[in-house]
Amino acid sequence: MAGTWVFVEQKDGNIRKVTYEMLSECKKGSDEVAAVVFGQGVEGLAGELAKYGADKVYVADDAIFANYNTGAFVAQIVAMINEFSPNAVLFAHSFNGRDMASRLAQKLDTGLATDAVAAEISAGKGLFTRAIYAGKALAKVEVAGSPVLATIRPGVWEVGSTAGAGAVVKAAVAATAADVYQIMKEFKPTVSARPDLAEAAVVVSGGRGCKGPDGIKLVEQLADMLGAAVGGSRASIDSGWLGHELQVGQTGKVVLPNLYIACGISGAIQHLAGMSSSKFIAAINTDTEAPIFGVSDFGVVADLFKVIPLLMTELKK
Amino acid sequence: MKVIVLVKQTFDTEAKIDLKDGKINDAGINLIINPYDEVAVEGAIQLKEKGIATEVVVMSAGADKAMDAIRTALAMGADRGILVKQDTAADEYARATALAAAIKEENPELILAGHVAADDGSSQVPTRVAEILGLPHVNVMTAVEIAGGKATCTCEADGGTSVIEVSLPAVISSQVSWNEPRYPSMKGIMAAKKKPVATKDGVAVANKVNIVEFALPAAKQAGIKVEDDADVCAAKLGEWMKSVVKVEVK
Ligand SMILES: Cc1cc2nc3c(=O)[nH]c(=O)nc-3n(C[C@H](O)[C@H](O)[C@H](O)COP(=O)(O)OP(=O)(O)OC[C@H]3O[C@@H](n4cnc5c(N)ncnc54)[C@H](O)[C@@H]3O)c2cc1C
Image (spheres, rainbow over the protein chains, first blue to last red):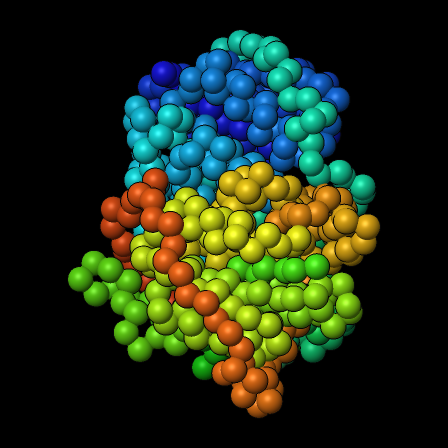
């Protein structure tokens, strides 16, 4: 048994950053690192995957893999696991990654560590650190199995620059139409010029203190100036000022940006769960007692309607 | 159509977590229905109100105290409950095994659950249950239409929204944006006391994942706080963003 596999997250040939993070981190170890990519017309991605550490690139190229669907993807990877016996398979902790890994783990009658923030993998065994209670505690778990399975939280590992050989191995297509039990009727991509919330280097979030669409507009203007993603507290999502997919917190997204700017957000425990691991946190809030200041590296006690426009002028200097 | 809703009892999301003897300390913590599962309960009740579901059965795997979660769901409007008794240290594999065995006896046409639990955050159990039962599944559903033996689910997906159709029976896990769960009424709470709840021992299998240790994350230290006129605040914040964080301005 050999090799750590990284399942490639891609859509229409665009590889998500978390794939590179996993390849780079695995490349630090001594085990062979392989990228596994399923899709249609995806062989050309091998070069890109090699740049970040893939020694091998397993490619399953077929129309059946054009869009993610659990049945076909799981049938394919099971066949490949049986043929090549990897030591571990890592997935991104994305919607697709956790869906595929869960169904796969059960099919293989094995364990799975989801949403891991650290990993130590050896032969037949993996030790993973998982954030539990929405990040209020950490659990180190041991997963035995062949292969060892885990999903990794995006943003916890750095993208490196050690390349691998990137030798392409074309896998025989094992999935058939009979494996497909979900019919994709429609896919509506989020139309946004802004980066994905879960991967953005800077996130600017607005809360109830934004008081309405006008305040949110200021948050968006600041975000665009910084090339940032926009997020929100549940209060601004429930008020309909922002879409549900932009909620940060315990029942929303967990974000790990370099900089998180909380505008008009009090810092309820459920909100802190989603953002307190950010590298730098700034807060703009009129209430000096607001709990958000307890986790902020830089807080200003002021009205966001005055501060944000002035801040934008300041940043342009 | 019989609907089974899987509910997990979890800590209140307000709960502060600390450790006692190396374990998570549950003393004095208020227990609730996992918020994602609560949405699934509400969704099932609404399906019954629309005449699509005929019976809503809530099922929970856990210790005796999980009965409170079942009673809350009954007070919201579910018809009956099943408590599958199991050690709370069961992992996702063991839990799914016990739930799937109990579901099989009920032969439902639809199995609903939240897509993730607010405590362990693992998002595995519904999908594992589907695999054990050999059923289709769909995760992170935000809206569903049921007709002609099929469920058409709108789902939150990576980079967008997808619409996925599966044939029933199926396992569908819900996102919190599906609906706004109701509070149990006084009448509902009274009625729940008389609703039947069966208790059975869960199939016991060994865990595949073992917890080695628990830890608390390093507490974040509060930093600089500026209380001054807006222009001073903005200047100082901007200066910090440029010199310390080194933001790029477009
Ligand atoms: C089960 C459950 C799950 C939850 N999950 C989440 C979650 O995932 N994410 C989440 O965010 N919340 C979540 N919540 C809700 C959470 O408890 C809070 O209610 C919510 O985060 C509050 O949002 P807020 O900070 O925007 O609003 P508020 O708490 O009302 O705070 C608004 C802040 O704006 C400030 N303000 C007002 N005017 C101005 C101004 N002009 N300039 C600057 N500041 C101003 C105020 O001082 C105040 O601090 C959850 C709750 C429950 C029960």
